[in-house]
Image (cartoon, rainbow, N blue to C red):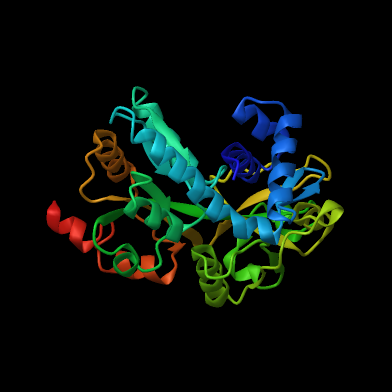
Length: 326
């Protein structure tokens, strides 16, 4: 399989646009499209759907993505095996535009001399597998079962509790109120498309919905004018959720409104995961930075079950194994 085509596929999947992927790869958009077409022909299936904003993965594309990531990781490991041992710190940030990218940016700003390579693994399970395999030195994820998920060889610490926000159209009652009270969310339908079955964010939204009787629709992304933001913008009752530090491009017209959720504030718990016996000096610096920067939950806040139990026991910022080593 052509590894350049695989890398082009990963770039388009992560960037969401052929031109951005081409810029990242240092080639033309035409060359990027040609590589994707070659790969699709070899696989015998379409990997992307074209939409006005760029491109989104088809079901086959989503199925192939973790395998493509594994191919890229194997190629990278092979190249590095014959190069000097010094290399950039590799950190899994889940996906571009997430709070994890922002957290890592804070570390890089404080340690500008440290070379860092970001990886988009696609979820906690992928982050943990990559860390265990030595493909990444650390990664950000939401852990549903801190002790059970990690197993031997890995440690974790809470890194950030991200407030959840809502996005509504200009005629939605929340837009006029300037905020969204949790108790009022149950009056409206929340559309959060693209939630992967079995993923940690599915668990988070299910816990949130059950806690406050919120109707959360997790159907897939539509295309064209039926996209989630277009639907939200045109509705007086529909809303969608987004993390406070998530970077999402909102259409300029009609204007969408991004608002805080209050009373209490739902918090999405990000953890930093790393190899317990890492020899990478920058990994140890990243762990120390995460511990210093972490702030415990506020009084008027809501957390999913696992994090709520952790903080109730006052074991938060680390797993028992990690605490024993300190």
